[in-house]
Amino acid sequence: MHKLAHIFRLGLKELTSLRHDSVLLVFLFYAFTVAIYMPAAGSVIGVHNASVAMVDEDHSHLSRQLAQALQPPEFQRPVLLPYGQLDQVMDSGKYTFVINVPVNFQADLLAGRQPAVQVNVDATAMSQAFMGAGYIGRIFQRELLNYGGQNDPASQAPVLLTTRALFNTNLEGGWFLAVIQIVNNITILAIILTGTALLREREHGTLDHLLVLPLTALEIMLAKIWSNMLVVVVCTWISLEVIVKGALGVPLAGSMSLFLMVTAVYLFASTALGIFLATLARSTPQFGLLAIPVIIPMLLLSGGSTPLDSMPQWLQWVMQGSPSTHFVSLGAAILFRDAGLSVVWPDLLALTAIGLLFFAIALMRFRKSLAS
Image (cartoon, rainbow, N blue to C red; front, side, top):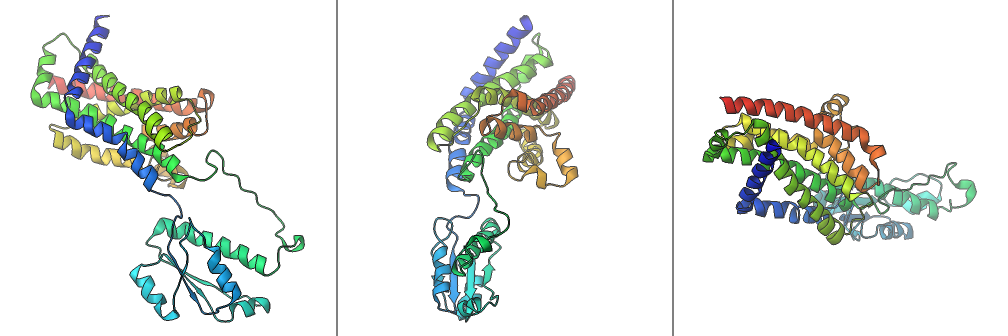
């Protein structure tokens, strides 16, 4: 009972210390408001407002029809250019797509020949270029089929493909990005808050004061974990309700309480990792340098920025040992697909096991650092 009281009072000391740290408070506010709203509202994953130019050498009804088929919001209205400026505008990067319709294009099509339309793509604008070229190809194919009179049942393809987008019907990239930003910020804050809290006490000498008290390394460590866990979980809940659901209008279908519970388990693992890194460092700058090569792979390779399935097989196996991989999977399943505990328990079990392993390693290292 005394141990629980010690852990509780030490945690209150951590919260009091955080309350007087104005820099960390400002960073917390920024991380769960501006840093979530701006990328989700301003960044678009996919084709949006792509610049298009067209070199129309045919000057036919069909070439004008192809130009009119490219509509906002995916594309800007095509700008007509003379043929001599094609290379110049591509070299300058003024347009992402420059389409060249050759002479006699309509006549060749009606004569049964197979004329070609050249689509020049500035692939340095990678996200727009990759998907935009596919969009243009499908749009032009549809227009050419309609113009050629191939809209009768006999000329249709033998298989009719029906596509349904589940959980995000309009394919809004900002919805998923908002949740991923929260996951990323939780990862950063969990490691940074606990690591800097421990190093701050060591640098100020307060850690030596704690050691002369009847306290164990386990009590000190648990106090830092529960206090920082409470702060981040509360900030996460407020951010989901106010920023994600309120300001961005993202329809979160799943259980908020289940997600917050999963967040607490993830914080248990990541805060233990932060303490472990702090025991390796002797100063705050050193801790920052150690944290960078740990945090960045956790953010980039967890499945939030790039699907896990597209990575090499060996890297997929390696990332199964990262708590962020399971947290990203749990977050998407719970918040968007309304998955319950009966569905997400394997990932939750793996996350708990990783958290206990990290905690045991960090505690062992923390005890060793206190003894030295």
